Each structure stands twice: as structure tokens, then as C-alpha cells.
Image (cartoon, rainbow, N blue to C red):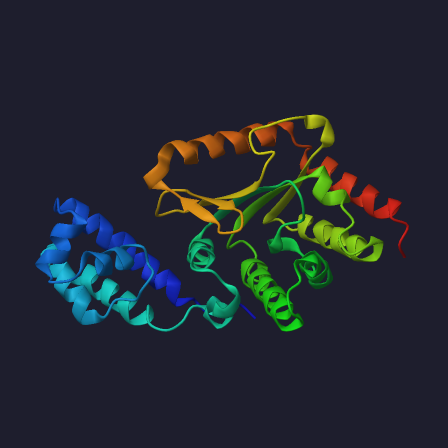
Length: 286
């Protein structure tokens, strides 16, 4: 079953429209907030899509921003009504930090996802047993492990449940393909899942071979999200996570160039799947 439209998408629509309208009338966030008698922090939360917007608050902003077209106002008011309620990941608040929760909102709205992972198979593509084995050394209690794994499974279902919604390219380092997380059986199952995902038209899996040598992102994984209605976004994956878009253009460009370089060094799609299959066969499982 295709998941219902998440409220975060309506919040995103509003934040983009309202930010563009504010900039069109030449107001800073502080000036706009003062005109509607809000705190600047409230306006910032609206423009980042962190909170929903009431219809009455929306109308106050539209008046300041001189949005008068009836079709536009009706569309934005409907988006405000649909922005209410929790996002799908809200039920996992106990295992989510705010930064990653915000990232999930962006990921839900993205049309392109390009990512590189140097150490392990990314959460987007993990099997349940692989995810459990990966979390085992962290010393988490069983309930927390179960919650984190369930979050990954739910995310996977929503990302890949509707073919064609998101075009994704995963570049995995050869080390990630060969590292025996959970032992041979668990890895073999995981590699088969990679092969299954790689057979989809909306998913591309490529492998960066050991022979590729050094490159800019040998120290960590990253995700580049693309949108039809907004600037690209970079998410650097580490303990706290960090995102950047238009506010750090140079860093974004550096990782876009890094991804391009990695793409030139990686094996082609067919060669990559063949390598994954050979590694699976060499495990001698089944």
C-alpha cells in the first residue's frame, strides 16, 4: 500500500512559498516577524518547515507579503490545513535526534538521492538482521535496538514503496560490501537485498573498488538530496549529523564535486552488481 502524503510535505510547500514571497517584497525575517508581531524564531521555524502554520497566521503573512491571487491563497490555505498533525517518524521520537528528524522531512520531499558510504551498507538498504547486527556492539538495550531497526524498516518501505517517486543512486565502498556484519549468513542475505534493489529501475547501486585509492570523502558518508522546487541539500552522516544547503554553498559544491569524482572512479552498474554477486557466492552460504 502506498503511504499517505506526510504533513511535512505541506509544511515544505508553505515554507518555500512564504520564503520566496518574503524575499519578493524585500523583507528580512526580522522585519517580517515584527510586522505580524511574531518572534523571529517563530518565523524561522515556519520557513524551515519545522512547524505547521495555522490558517489565521498564514493569512497575516500573506497580507504582509501582498499575496492576493485567490487561487494562490486558496492553495496555500489548503496546505496549511494539511500541514497539521505528526509526521510518520514522530512515533520514533525516542530514538531520533532533532537534526535527523529534520533531515527525514527533506528526504521525504526529495526527488533525487545520491549517497556514498565507505564503511557499511546504508540504512536505506539494510535488512532487519543486518541492522540488528550493526547495532549490537553499541551496547543498547533490546527495546531501543528494536525501535531503531523498526525506524529503518519503516523508512525503507516509505522510500521504495512507490516506484519512481525517488530516483536514488547508492555508491558503496568495496569495504562495505565485503565487511561481514553479523557473519556470513547475515551478509549473504544483505547482499541479495542489494541485488534485488539494484534490479529496480529507480535504484542504482555502484561499488567503489579498493583500487580507486584516495578521494575527498574517505573519512565519512554523505547524502545529496535534489528537489524540483528548492536548492540541493547536503547531509553529512556522523554522530550528530549536519545539513547544509544554500547557507554553505561552497561546502555543498565541494561534496557535489566529490560525488562526481567518486562516480568516475566507481564501477559501472552492471559491473557493481556482478561484484556484489561474486562476493555473495564466495561466502558459500546456501
